[in-house]
Length: 266
Length: 86
Ligand SMILES: Nc1ncnc2c1ncn2[C@@H]1O[C@H](COP(=O)(O)OP(=O)(O)OP(=O)(O)O)[C@@H](O)[C@H]1O
Ligand SMILES: [Mg+2]
Image 1 (tube, chains in turn brown, green):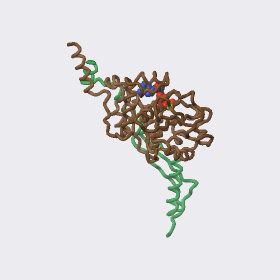
Image 2 (spheres, rainbow over the protein chains, first blue to last red):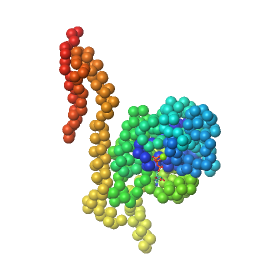
Image 3 (cartoon, each protein chain N blue to C red):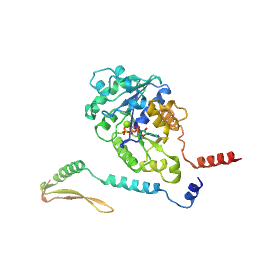
Image 4 (cartoon, protein in one colour):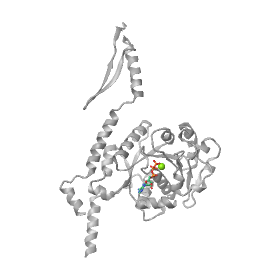
């Protein structure tokens, strides 16, 4: 077994990296793969609470890098989703507590133990980013349809290319009504500007906040649009690269909803 | 719904057009910016190459980026002390 390491990154903070890591990791595990999600945001850990595993932490990634524990000890097993494991960040250290070499060294053992390893990258382009991408085979860049976020994504994409990684793009927090009104960049606009391949579109969804409040995996909620979008992203990563990306706000949607309204009137 | 529909056809532009224009501009500008590190490396390399052909006064030379509205230029200024004979 030779696992694949995928870094989830963005440049700008607060655009949905942690949410995406938790959701795609969980969805991938539900598809039968053995998955580790690793919180690389040393000093500001979040992935544990988003996944609802915060009170089961014993060891963390820094302990692992310092050989204070084994992978089996650091990896917390999710009890709701089989094959899903979290390696948390340490909260008391900082980004300089790890080096890219540490991560490269650790990656061997991780690849041997898991099918997919997702690295939740911190915001920024400094050491935390360098650590998170150090051993990555692939990268997912998350951005929202906003000027500042797309600009930072462009910067990150440049840095990834310099490391010979060709990233794929997730546009998150799309508000279809605003796009239809012309008050939000569409994913076509974003793709045109960044000129990289898209791997998924995620709408703004209140269920994200609800699931984070309770620490229950979004991808287990059948009625969550964002959850479904993350399931499809996982499938695209996991052997179905050509699964179509549906447009959240196309003309068809307009005619369909108009049609629905007319039908209801009759 | 119908308002949006009509506005699309009768040319009301939403704020996204502004967003897109500003974004494209910002990205072009970002790429013109050159870091000090890069400039220092470039200076070192240029000096090395020129020194193969000329004796130059490395204390008096200057490497700069001159920027105007629509172009940026690399300006390298150095006194030549003598040409090297091969
Ligand atoms: N599709 C979505 N719909 C609604 N809310 C979302 C969505 N995606 C993310 N959020 C919310 O946005 C906020 C930021 O998300 P998240 O923590 O995943 O971002 P991040 O990129 O990891 O941030 P940081 O840079 O601080 O690590 C959270 O409150 C999250 O619940
Ligand atoms: Mg985060």
